[in-house]
Image 1 (cartoon, rainbow, N blue to C red):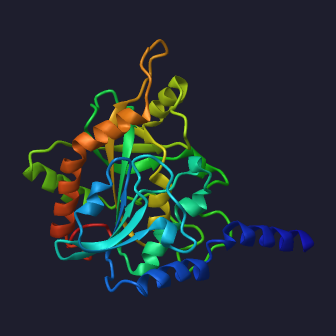
Image 2: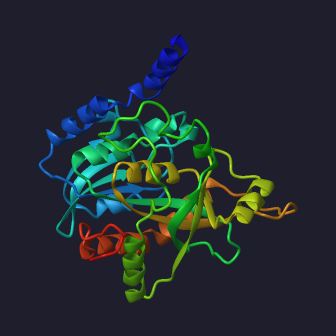
Image 3: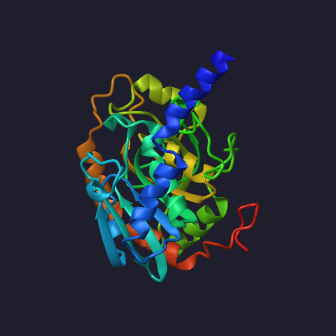
Length: 305
């Protein structure tokens, strides 16, 4: 019996910092200071923070000012939480996300998804920069994420490990339909209207901060991955666990190196440069998506109704 009690105590400690009450304190602090009640949450990846600048009627909270909120330390992540409107839709936008390679646990990296839920958010849009593993992908391509491969989430680094609070979501969530198909279909239709090519594929999330070895990339390719990055999958997991609908978009900012004798080297500067070049197209598509899609009109089979 003693062994079981100790086990429960360890689990309670694992997620104690991110209990329902702690997360509610953050959400309540924000709601006390802004009149906007967001229905959509947006997370901006590397070089894609301009989405936040498109909001109108905004109230900006630097992460450093929000109690118990992490701080973003990566170049290309502005570190602001912005409330405002896209068209007439109330939105909260994260200009910058949190990564395990910054020294944060995956539970902390995904805590904003729980904050979103308690703010009243119903749908999340996740954007990220990614390397193209699929050899048909080109730098600058936009890929809708239909599924993910996230080796770190197979271990005790899964952000759902530890004490579970049913007010967030179930102890054993199904994860085969994390990414809302109806949203992908609608986003693709909007892109076609703008004559923009949209790809769809499987995203793989690794921990970083180093880029992947050739052997790792070849292995991911064999597993069915089309693109690779250092974020997003764990956020999508927790958002879905919290009952939020998910649209995730990867901008292919570099081609993954799968040849052992290649003399090319990936670098963050290349990622930011490509993101800046394609940011306007992606921002425009996201804005049109938020304005046009009926975000609440999704049936149990993830179809627009």
